[in-house]
Structure formats: C-alpha cells, structure tokens
Image 1 (cartoon, helix red, strand yellow):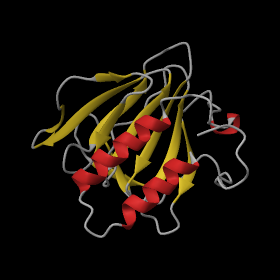
Image 2 (cartoon, rainbow, N blue to C red):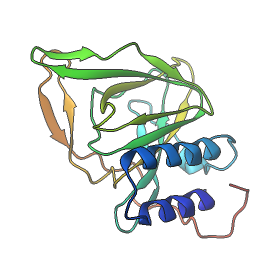
Image 3 (cartoon, rainbow, N blue to C red):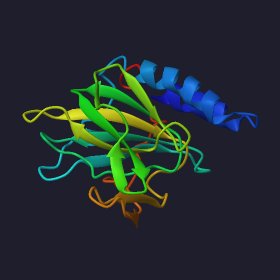
Length: 192
C-alpha cells in the first residue's frame, strides 16, 4: 500500500500528465495492489447490513487523488451515479457488476452490457471515457471488496446520482464511512 501511494504521488506531481496517462499508469499500480489480498486492515473491510461502505485508505493532502476501499454486503448496490474525475477500480475480494449508462434526451439508457470485475482485474471511469454507472455486489451471499483510486478527493467532490427513470441528476457529496484515515506510515506488518 505504501509503495502504491508513493508511486501515485510521484505520478500526479508530473505537470504534463494527461488523463490517458494517469489511467494507464495507475491501472498498473492498482492491479499490483489488488494482486494479493493480505494487506487491507480488517477494520477497513467491515460491511454494513443495509448499505455499502466507502472507507478512505489514503487522501492526498493536496486532493490530487484518493484511495478507497468499497465494501459490499451481500446483494448491495449503488444508485446510478457519476464521479466527475478519472478513476480506477481494482477488485480485491469477491466480484462486482458494473453497468454503464449514458444520458440521452429521453433520460438514462444502458451504455453497453454490464460486465463483472473479478479479483485482480481493473476497470476505469472518467468523464472522457464514460463516467455514469451503477455498481453492485455480484453475490447475494457474501461480501465483496474493491479498491478505488480517484483523481481527486472523492469524499469531498460534489457529483450526481441519477433518477433511473428520468435521468434527472441530484447533487451529493459521499464522504467516507471512516472518519480518520489509517496511518500508512506506521511500521508495516505485512508486505504491500
């Protein structure tokens, strides 16, 4: 985790960094991070019985990026929503289903088929390549966990959820399930 955060920090410091480069480079970093499932602290993997949780793992002090664990209880899903910044999702445990959408004059419509993200796989979102989707736990009987990287502090960014029938947006700020970020700079107990 620490080496991933350090590499991301070096990446976002580059003035000439394009969104395409950020997505390509950070996809590799997130793929490396989710290649093993032995580093996420138990307290950042606790599901809620009624809704998914979004735990802040690391927030860049300049809000250039944030790293979050999404913990999906059985059968849980998001509303249709956007991000307004680039992002990379890496599947750590279980699986999740991603259904992309697009806004049309008549409302929301699926933007292609849903796809399932399996452990070790990554997917990208951004306003440029597609930013509106609904995500759900692929399982009705177990927890799934994905690691999300965003090109901003996603817990502080104003973005939208969309009415599935009309496509009408409603602004929101997600915040985080945990109030304090973990101390990534404490001595490591396992390699990451």
